[in-house]
Length: 104
Image (cartoon, rainbow, N blue to C red; front, side, top):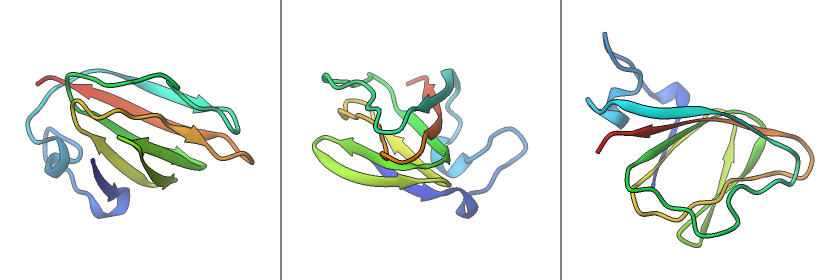
């Protein structure tokens, strides 16, 4: 797991966040709005590739391999391949994240 703040990151001519994703290609992604108190994937949830989250609204937690990381608007989290992860929204407001999966 690697954690960043959006205002600390840069872009180049072809990539947003090149210091995080390098030259990898995004293969899948989306936006998810977590209802207050909602948890994604209560079961074991891992990928064979890295997943990047950009939190655009709200607060919550992102447990990774049993360690709970608080997240909030502006956080950028890279979950590395094989790490078990489960995003949870705070109880008082929605948590909105953009997520991307990369090629290997």
